[in-house]
Image (cartoon, rainbow, N blue to C red; front, side):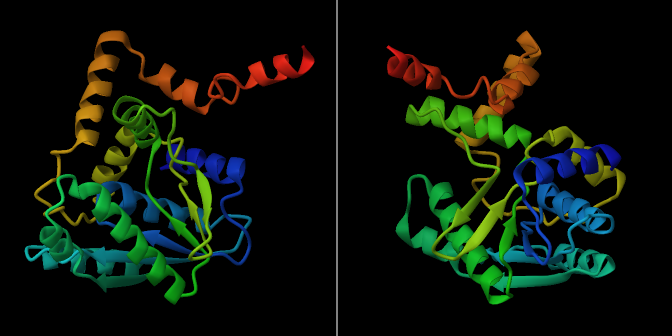
Length: 246
């Protein structure tokens, strides 16, 4: 818990993620990452120099076989933290089935994010916190590099003009293994994902690739360092300076 709080506080400080008076919606998918984010932000709230509120928002995608007992356990956990828990019902799954998308994950992600933004705005939130962690940063980079031919990954903090909500990712310095450990140790409630595409995506392939490379070369930490180090992640910026001087 202390290690996660330290890394989370560093990310919040480095990127100015939280300010006095913020009302932060935590995107609570029900998985270990988002549950851990809620637990850590609730703990950070107790000693944070900034005073802020939390609201936990779960977007119900419309799956028929969601475990209602797991949802109730999550609601009880939020109540124990003193955090309001909101479930937003949608028909996202039915819409995706009707469209018969070859790659439904991208569309689902956009629609889920749109629903999150709408509910966050409805409840007066000015920020939305997501549980993306350091492994996600690296995997997103490799997905863009391999499948799209782009050197890119998501930002730690970004402003969404359409909804006027700022998106923050306080776990960018936290490796997934620590979140798994936290979820086990504190027996965080989990809402298991009933999506038929779960564990059968390009992201899962990339996750396995990173694990394989790390096992063979021990390079995962070096790759993360390359992404986070400001002098290493702007490949050819200095070329522009050279051209100006010449």
